[in-house]
Image 1: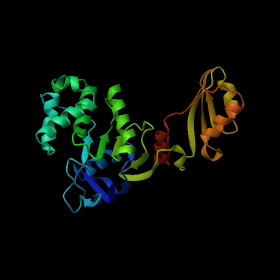
Image 2 (image 1 turned 60 degrees about the vertical axis):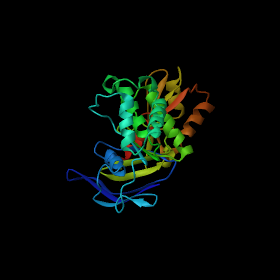
Image 3 (image 1 turned 90 degrees about the horizontal axis):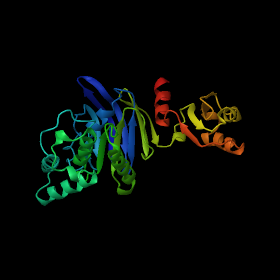
Image 4 (image 1 turned 30 degrees about the vertical axis):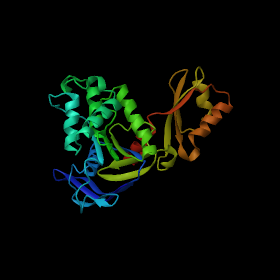
Length: 303
């Protein structure tokens, strides 16, 4: 478990995290969203003991970074947004160095390097120099580095940025499996385009928690309306009229698509879908547009 109590962190004399309180339990994968400068990266780095805290307490089970020594590197795996300059060494040598600095020895190092290279599908490139890898492969190497000690806590800064499709699948698998393994995952997103395999959503602004909850849009009751995009081939205009009594406004994009705003006080999105199906409209898809976490962020920050 991670428990933050009234934590304040400064960056260059400016408060970046302001009396922040939050608790994360084993098995939770938390997506953190917020505007630029909200404190997302600061939160990750404070938990990882990469930044000192000015006041408050961060506890990990029975230990506290405010009173005791910070937890060992074996507890954490941290994947930064990126690294501007890589050392001119091979991929396996890089992992060996980090494994050694994390306290692994002898056979443990070889096993950890082999395992993590396999996990991120880089075994065939283990002997390649890092500066020859693609950006997606480099990001996967960062993931491998974070997994060397099989950490209980995985901290990801913009995890999908710069990743290739294989890397995206790896992050998806890690977040999905966290509920089974009891691992804690905390991931910061700049674009609020969060996949639905996360269990929780945390919204930050100006270093403070705006709202938080399970990763289900209907639980964020402060949102007054949802903007959705529906596909009804050749029948978009008729479909828009059919649910007109439920919508605040609607726009027919073309014969197949229309968008609309559904006030949350007029019932859930499922009700609009049920009305269309009952009326015989050829509904093929109904999606949040933009994704619902972005709508939560925009609604709460603007208000």
